[in-house]
Amino acid sequence: MKTIMSLTTASVLAISAGTAFAEGSITAVSWGGAYTKSQVEAYHKPWTAATGNTVVSEDYSGGLAEVKAQVESGSVTWDIIDVEKSDAVRGCDEGLFMEIDHSTLPNGADGSAAADDFIPGSFTDCAVANIVWSTIFAYDSSVIANGPTSIADFFNLDAFPGKRGLRKSPKANLEMALAADGVAAADIYEVLGTDEGVDRAFAKLDTIKDSVVWWEAGAQPPQLLADGEVAMTTAYNGRIFNAVASENKPFEIVWDAQVFDVDMWAIVKGAPNADLAMDFLKFSTATEQLAAQASYISYGPARKSSAPLVGSYHSNASLEMGPQMPTAPDNFATAISNDFEFWADNQDELNERFNAWLAN
Image (cartoon, rainbow, N blue to C red; front, side, top):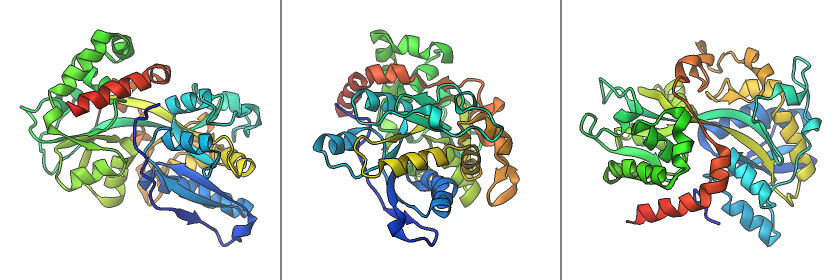
């Protein structure tokens, strides 16, 4: 099995609130940077305070390669992992994750059952959603005064010269390429489901291939912009928001043809601390915790009951978080909903095609 990304295990962060490590510990794997920081503040530290258990955080860049290697070797060190929905489905099908009884999840703060409180598409057999996020593109407004406004502009090197940052993966790139080529959001996967559609997407990517700087970790796109290495780049919306809100970077998000998705918690099959990981999963996907995370990063909570609790940015009371979310009406007009079933079925084949294309 080929994966989208190579593993880049990064720094290990032990989260403690003054309780003894002997109480118990889990290893939680996520995407690093501002995103993991939001989880540490909203999930890890409160869980430690409530239970006395600790969380060791490890970073990765997506895909199932390391999980598969651990499970197949019988040497599992990870307990719980934050995955894209298509990987949650594939990992469950391949026996890499434990099945979850969703009826055991806590009710919403308004009393609604979890099955009614989570937004549609939040459950798979082995995973529970925590956030709604999107891939967007962004630019530095201090460099480009009259900036791009559409995905077509991202592919227009004549009107907007300079390097482009793209994630080293077919995901989102193929969808955005078709959108730039005139395919409506509602038709993206119908077109991409044909050989001609795949050829069309790669042909559009060909038009900027020589100007692409490839990124893998979510922390890289803001740095590429800050260092002036690219004129514009695709990125996770929360990473650009964090650079603007926390570091005062003059970056602008272009929401046209954003590709939105959910991320999910899954427990690794054979996890050494599976019971503790399940307790953490229930705690971190409760109404209050999901709302708290949204005060640190502009990813939408997966529970409906969390929405009324989402307020301002944690360090700036005047910065309301609602308009920063991918699902805000002004941001959502041309949004593309990631088709997890399409990617679960076609990911291996398109990864091979993408890697061959990169090599040529």
